[in-house]
Image 1: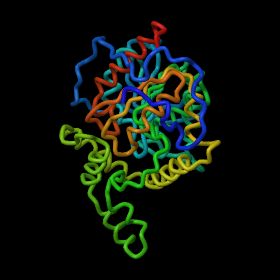
Image 2: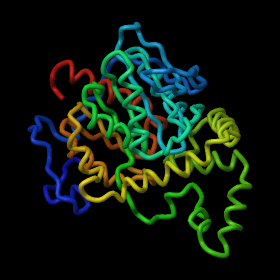
Image 3: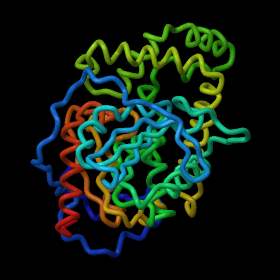
Image 4: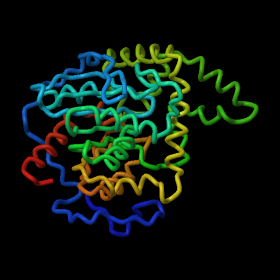
Length: 343
């Protein structure tokens, strides 16, 4: 996946205009920084959390202090069903360069949704825009999965708020009818007449550990390498999440909102949004991503005006968790290249 054929479909049948900015480097030319990084410590717990108001938005966030209060800020946006804890290790790797803020979107993690919140992609995007607008200067914006789709929309709408963009398996339109994309292969049967009620009862009766292990198998290429204490962390988070009165409704409504964004008419398609992003952008994808096909990776990176692509073998949907050191070196490599005006 080192080249992209000029004949490759770039918009699933939607006529698109490629970025006019000439490329001075190959699409897959991603420098990896050799700067010293802190040793990867998989025993660290999630970073401390707090409620934070920025602009007129209040979100639960987890923060890593950077080298100084005046250091740049990095903001991390989780995917569907995720939370700020999805960024623990990558935030630790980058703490020597930036002040990190990982957010819980409304309805996820520990952020209760405000009254009337509709969980559409447009509303999630507006929430992040308003949160960033209240911070001091543009940020390095990160997004994984659905968070990547939100980050794309934010960068397209408000380029003044985004210093750089890192997308990890962003949830660009991918409508493959593949049951392997479900955490539980029984899930599609939950909506089948006659048998649906029984399937839903079976799914509801699963233990938190069963639920956590299913998500692990879905999102990771090699779930067996995840340390036991991290599995236990996931179980505890599942128990907490299941006890929140808003979570299930938020998950269902946000899932519908994401799918609706994939089914949007051509003039509103996400593929129309991507070429509007002017921020320096790094796209990271795992070859064994079951949720959003790695085949979408070249199209996404090529449509970005200043995009480059890093594809990681034997990695699934959450490269920032499976390969935090490599992702950190790629991010730092982008930042260093920007300092040299070589991105």
